[in-house]
Length: 331
Length: 270
Image (cartoon, rainbow over all chains, first blue to last red):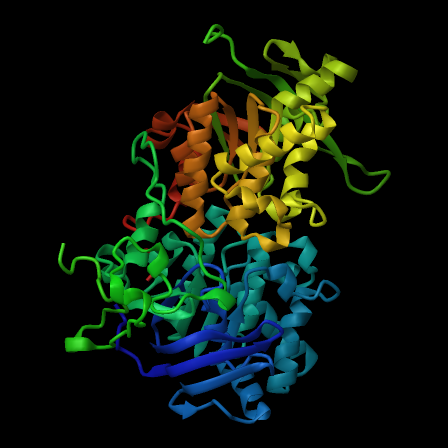
């Protein structure tokens, strides 16, 4: 467990993000508080529209101009909200690596993959073309691509899905970032490839002491790689804590219901699955009070009026949740 | 069940070859390689395998959307290759498909009513009034209010749109439904709802399913039997219990070991 072992890399406090759209002002992230430390993996788990990607895009200054951001985001102790575009650009280049879901969209089909990696070194490290190429081949080897010399000379369409994602990972870690962001990195991959890519992310994190923020909607992926998990719903973090605690003794009814609704192998000929009624809200229609109250089996009168506030580090506990009537409270 | 001993759907030694590569140096890709299976009435065969293993090729051949290179499909005792004209149209009523992405299966310019009643129009079932009543009935069956009939696909959530796709598939009272990754594009909290719906409808109408999926937990939940495909071949078949509790083939074992279980695999990559 690497919890609290390293220095904090990202600290987000009281973060609110609004988007000005034709549907009016949408409140995408609501009072978010989270942090991730060196050598630690934080998983953000949630359904579409919950605010997972917006959270990390905000933390890396990647949100479009229509976004209104309030609160504080510190990167290695320095406030980055309101920083100049040039500072942000430098930060993203040197300190942050990003992996997205679809590797084919992250790679340029017209350039050899080796050249795409080498470009990073010529631009940011002032290397000559041949030095940069050698460095690129070395990097491909470190992400476990067999025969890296030959692969470097190929185009993205000549690689398998798993190899492409390895190339994207190589590019993300090229300049030895302190933060690796992985936005659904294995969603487009087959299960066995998924396992290999997660294994690689783990290896690189441990070797390079990176902080990792991994976004996923897959509970199995989250459980396998997370030190800590943040569950998001309707723009809010509704539960956050040590992965084992959140998954084995969830306190928020949403977390509990998600875990219960998963079909499990070996559950026998179960007749029906436990379901959550209704649908997850879109940003334009997030209900008042607790966003989950209309779908919640534990809802009480208060839930539809008063937003439950997540109390971080209450009584020194690292497991926090935003619920008026949590699981295990009075049952 | 008068004919419980004869399968509703039977695939006999299916082979499908594709020619790939540039002209002059064509090579052969065998997408289905001596595929054999039977599905009995009211049962579900789950097909699992990684991308490119031939799952959807087999489904397309079953629906007679694709002709096999050799081999045959028997539906209710009849070789479907022999069907044409009126007999083919009759066959099409009995077999329907639900795909992964409901927004690409529904025409964005058609209302929900139009989408669901289109099969009734094509097969000239009922008059206008009867069709309106039938669409209402189908919407209720899949858990939607009849008022949804006037909506367009962009006014639906993913789960609602998939319910509409299912209603459309049910419109002609088919016996056999091919479900090709029907919940993969849906939100987590919606997947269980749709799985329960499919199971309820199966019981209610004695439906027979072919369920293609890559999430083994999901396939285990809905299936009676499982066929594991690798590179066009079925490498292992058996009941759900047999496949998941004592897999024999290396590939099945590999698929099972790649399943990430929130309890068993907790902290596996820390």
